[in-house]
Length: 454
Length: 96
Image 1 (cartoon, each protein chain N blue to C red):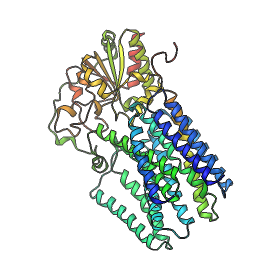
Image 2: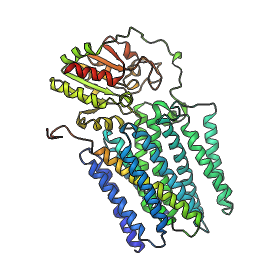
Image 3: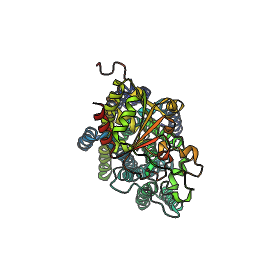
Image 4: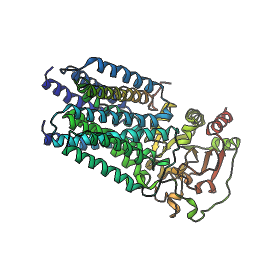
């Protein structure tokens, strides 16, 4: 196939990617959009296979091994583990771009400066995406501590590594025959990824995965510049833009700037510094008593957090929803943008439990009518319903937009114990007059409520 | 293609990406991430040509890149489809 025809196919593939993303604008068309996007990928790969001089043994080997791993992971992964899987895939994308950048460099005999710059960018971004994502994967899957790791002079060390990579780039560009600078740059890029994710943890993980998602796209675009392939540039930039938007949504939802997330090591903040906030009496309630309140309720809002995922409680939540609806109550769900460990995580878990997506309301839709709800049930969420964000100026999360659960007539908090949330901040909601604590495993508590209805 | 054209396309694609992704509702953000993960597996197209190089190290790196990018492409599209298949609307959703 001539290169003109391959280029034409690439244009069609780019159009299919764009149309596919456009179809993701609504849950009704999203599945079709994903299929369209995958067709774009398929024709781009098939067209490329027709170019001359390919080594099919190696390619088929890569296809079979990569395809098998991808297919098995995609089928087996639990919806609760989606954040770690996305983190891992981000990393593989970065590594692929690093390899492409590196190998195209070695395949080129007399490189130009611009080419060398783009190769270095794909190695740098690809490398730090790879190790950063692996570390994020480790933190999310709790193979290593999810707590942020902060030490003095972090910014200086990270800037130093980045400068060292750039210095290697300059030295290598001046003397491309000396491969040592290249190896050093690869090593330093990998190190930078670790150093950059290390101080981030806890409630900031959604920001990190979004950012690494963006990096994996930008790395692909950089590799596209290096090999002069326009389809890589287009597809990579689309992904890069997507990740940047998600990152900014996550930052806004936490009322923090990106640099604050990246460097401050939130969650290690000591809470003892602030003044003691209205500590009152915690009022526990049994599932049986809660049942009488729910039975009389005509409107209920469920506010899930990561605790719901940990307790695997989404299915029993759906059961309770049906019973309440059967009882004549309106039931909706309020989803905070940073509930869970990645953007949209709660929505997927609830979709898995067959909760219709039109019952899932965003924070801005629910807050104006929060007072009209008889009961708010908080399942494994803490910081995203913390009224201290509105009321306590000294609180580390002051100013963060939260779901105003405390304004509902009665608030049920399903919680394992009185331990503070992922961000390690006190929550005055638990002490409010209209709050009742339902201690214990969320799945069990909900199960008891469901039983009470039968 | 010369440099300026590539940069031109790059800039336009970023703007297009912003416009497209801003319209994706927050309920679909997880499938958006896994789906865009699959798209970033486009590196596969670049890796294919390198896997055929005469230089052994180049072609091994290219083959490794093919493998990792394929994980992204196959895994990304499949898991996105699996998720999106679960999203249902209330009215006449399951026909009960």
